[in-house]
Length: 141
Image 1 (cartoon, one colour):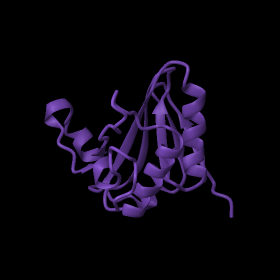
Image 2 (tube, rainbow, N blue to C red):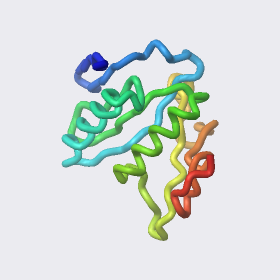
Image 3 (tube, rainbow, N blue to C red):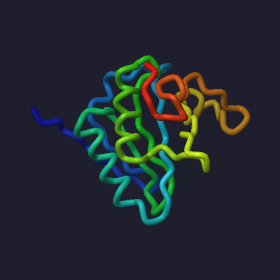
Image 4 (cartoon, one colour):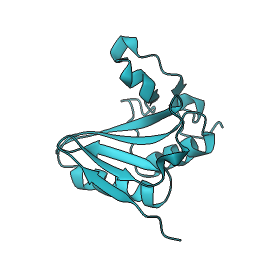
């Protein structure tokens, strides 16, 4: 069975949409990946691929040469989080510190974005260390 994906572009974002009907308003959020100039082709490929492979049902990226990509799912979709994190690990999309430890990326709920929770005002409910050992990358869940 082939997934029918829509790609919608505006001045700010490029959306890759599979089946967002699974989203629950107060539970939907995103893992983010920040890309730099020169990585636009890579991030387009990633967003298309994760939706086509049904790793997530919606992805988007900034419509410029550098910016952010967002990969959407519900906060309580543990298997979905594992799929996204596995994809990120396999594609070297989680940065490491100078000592080689993975950064403890946060999952951000859309409601937190809507409320303007950024920087010190943002307290994540879900972080990467709930899924992997940040020193080794080994799964703990």
